[in-house]
Amino acid sequence: MIPGEFNYFAPATLQEAISLLTEYRSGAKILAGGQSLIPAMRFRLAVPETLIDINNLTELQYIREEAGYLAIGAMTRESALEESPIVQQHYHLLADAARVIADPIVRNMATVGGNLAHSDPANDHPAVMLAYNAQIVTVGPNGTRAISIDNFFVDLFQNALAEDEILTEIRIPKPAANTSGAYVKMERKVSDYAISAVGAQLTFNGNTCTAARIGLTNVSSVPMRAKNAEQTIIGKTLTDDVIEAAGQAAAAECDPSPDLRGSIDYKRDITRVLTKRAIRAAIARMKA
Ligand SMILES: Cc1cc2nc3c(=O)[nH]c(=O)nc-3n(C[C@H](O)[C@H](O)[C@H](O)COP(=O)(O)OP(=O)(O)OC[C@H]3O[C@@H](n4cnc5c(N)ncnc54)[C@H](O)[C@@H]3O)c2cc1C
Image (cartoon, rainbow, N blue to C red):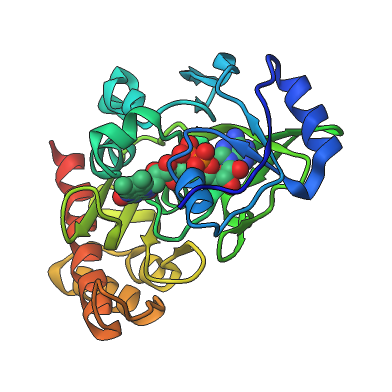
């Protein structure tokens, strides 16, 4: 189908983009990579009166280490994550996810900020950023604010961004010593959304797991952490039995819907298996 009519602006500065967003408010939508918004407009699931295209804001394309965190500009393309030496060497969970989001053609356009702003529980970055305990930075007419990822996703496709705010940066805390992570995804075919996927970021003191964050993809209506699974492993030596218990906890606490990707029981069991795999992959990386 052909999208409905809309006004189109391509601001040259962030300030101009915010002014336009303030002026057009709820009738306006930011256009980033367009890989979710344009299909939604073609199906008339989204009918914005005004599109504010932020592709000229190249200053929002960066991946750089700051004091204590990795800063990713919102307009950073997914493909840039795959090409980033910092990501590939030090942020393994993110590097894993970057390889399995959509396909190379989509990844050349889709942005990290758009993936999070869309707040689709089927998208991969929400679980990744929940596992990393990331912060979302936004800019609006009242200035800049940082939102904890734990408070960012509020409902299906809904987040804590105000109508007149733009997501500008994602901050991933620099991993503590003896910390490692992995993202494991099961998809029906390349370029598909996950049946389920699990991101695990674990910290160890010797053989004991001292901190854990586990994010789940596409098994709930709002991106979620598997908090019971996390509690199952924190303070423990990760034996086969403990890892199995974590998998079972994640399977029990997720809340998948049945669809073409599988039944509820199937998705729960895949989540159990992927939780175990993600934990084991993180442990293997710690030892490497
Ligand atoms: C064939 C195909 C397969 C896909 N498979 C996957 C997959 O496996 N995993 C996955 O995670 N994703 C997948 N996607 C989705 C893809 O990654 C999307 O592009 C992404 O979710 C949205 O990013 P975007 O930059 O394209 O945003 P857009 O489509 O431009 O925008 C999406 C939404 O976010 C808002 N928005 C965007 N940027 C900002 C910002 N900076 N501030 C405020 N609001 C903003 C827009 O207004 C819009 O509502 C797939 C897409 C396609 C077409």
